[in-house]
Length: 378
Image (tube, rainbow, N blue to C red; front, side, top):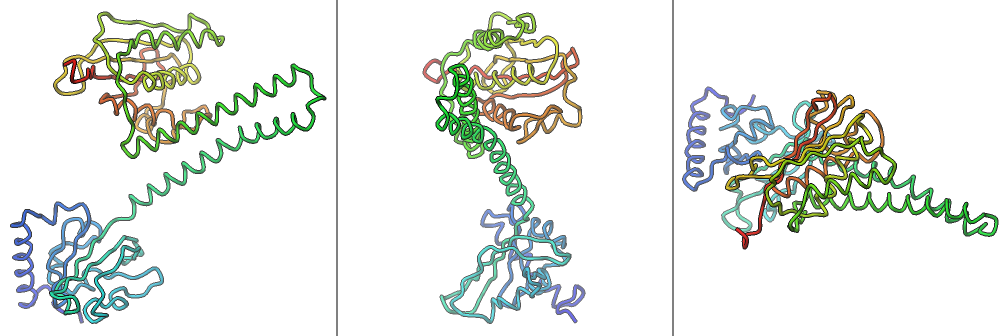
């Protein structure tokens, strides 16, 4: 029989004391229900006196049911081998020098895995335990992060294997049989090696960008940027590479506000969006550069760039995944990291980026950058 059932006077008294003690926390400016992690506190007798909202969500146990109950009832934890956790650790009767338990994976009923750590509070170093403070965290967020890292490693390994195999093969062949090849053959092999080396360099640059974006360390070095001229340079590069000039339509609304941004990173954004439109879209690629309302408070105007095509567009069900890692359209190719990086760069500038359907039926990407003039020019 469980001790302290909900209807007994003892249980009601314990819950009243628990509420008072949680009120003490509130007087200190701490509301346990505002904490992002689960918090469970047991008193010197092992009964729960604090069971916050996150703990109730993680364990699927209402706080009203847990308060006043023994700790092992409120948190019936087992280790990954099926052993009862509180019997193993014995916080109240175990070693007097023990101060807690490090974070580890434990199981709730139904084999639901959570992260648990505990701290033992004593009045004096080897005295009896006055409080057991338990922190609970859901493992789902960590699992998503681990899956994302695993996918990143797998993608990088796959993307590196092909160009490095090519580089190794051609260089080994040239070194072993240099005299057997004509100058044209040598030139073709070296051009292939150069292209594959550039591919590896781009991949490494993407990985560095992702690392900086994820850690919030992406630096923006602002300079005056002529966004219209920058778009024009990219179009000229495509025409020089063989694309018909009439495939591109550049429309610039004047006057445009002076834009202060990182020119290299804005070039990276434009390159990625135009490459997507050329490679995955069809028909005319239209680029509109206009002045618009600033997405940032305290600024009136901003610059908006819209890149659209006349292809089949992006399926409606995929719109919310376009800027996530590893998203690829219907045509395979690339790492699927480009648009994730584009979004990170735009947001590092204080801007916004959206995706939708173009008037011609294709994809339409629109990013807006605040003017963001340096403070000494304001």
